[in-house]
Image 1 (cartoon, rainbow over the protein chains, first blue to last red):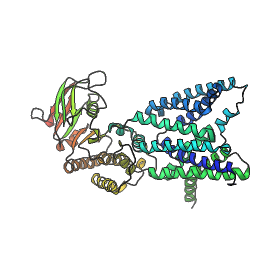
Image 2 (image 1 turned 60 degrees about the horizontal axis):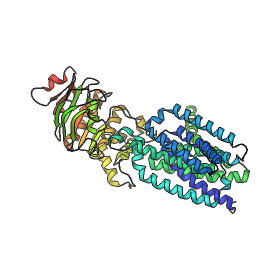
Image 3 (image 1 turned 30 degrees about the vertical axis):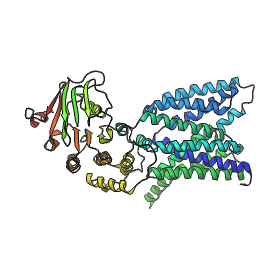
Image 4 (image 1 turned 45 degrees about the vertical axis):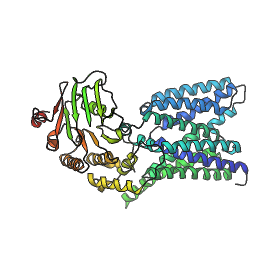
Length: 270
Length: 229
């Protein structure tokens, strides 16, 4: 199966996205911004639809809208965790706008826009992989530069602020990295799957790891493993890759609580 | 170390009349007063988080906020986002030069320094235990070790003794005394339990009815000040 170039491209792009998502995911979970991440994924659809309507490339619209929303979310700083309602209202408005754009676009081919929602990892071109690699390197380098203050600000924001760590600046940079990740990954794995890749690996990491290094390592390994396994299963059983990745990650997430429940059960009956 | 001239504290409304005070290096002062009298606002002004409404304040000869690397702050209320498996060690190590951008490799010196501090505050026993399962007193010792990790010259503590049982209070005060002596650290501590700590202090700053009293001189005896608070 790996002899086919479409499978090689799928594997390469999947591994790149899994690695970046695996790392960002840890901060999404630590900073408790899962809902904002979910919103960014869905806003991609509106950005893409708006772009398609104007006749420009979908990634332009996605990136523009996602980055604008990311800056707004970032400026909200710590308040975003307590403002699920505000994020929800903006999300529904933007989604409604996306539906309107699709309605205006109905005479044209809307399949390309809809692929933003579900992605198509089996149709990745070599040019897309190069773009993905370049964007991933940028995200990774910026993340390495801000990792220390970002971790401090994520774990202990009040004390970090007293040490002159710029919480708002870090929050904006983090959301911009998140927006960049969502925009590039949506092209390949879809808005729905990007959300899964940005939440579950980090959530699994915190279930098993007790240091930030271990949590990140587990998160990246789990994300990469799920991509490889999903591609194999999808290929042999003719299933959608997105469905396979989602199922594998969801199953991996319940292993820990399930095993501790079973352990307790066996202790109680013995 | 800290010089205040005609200082007025507050968010929008002034909390006090103008006051002058000079706090010297290696002093351990208590800050007392009723709720809302401006004690925590004073600490935030020293850190540069809040600008003074009027007057001037210098910290280590500079404007507040310029040399916060030399100051550690233990706030009264805080939000700690550690996961269930993370220990206090993670909190302490993530604070080590946490303001610096760029990559840093974990060095053995940091680990040794962390262990030394945990021993000093008496928290080695539970340093690997999940932080979220620790008692209030145990967490406060971890906060103390965290505050010392960057080798500060000044430590600001906002109600560190609140919610501690008498035994935990005694342990915490002993740890502070040891740190004060061993590291020549200046301490400013807000507390409503001054009778517990009074004998260790060099004096008080008393926020009362909008007037800030410098209670280090004979005119303001310690006993008169803390009794009745």
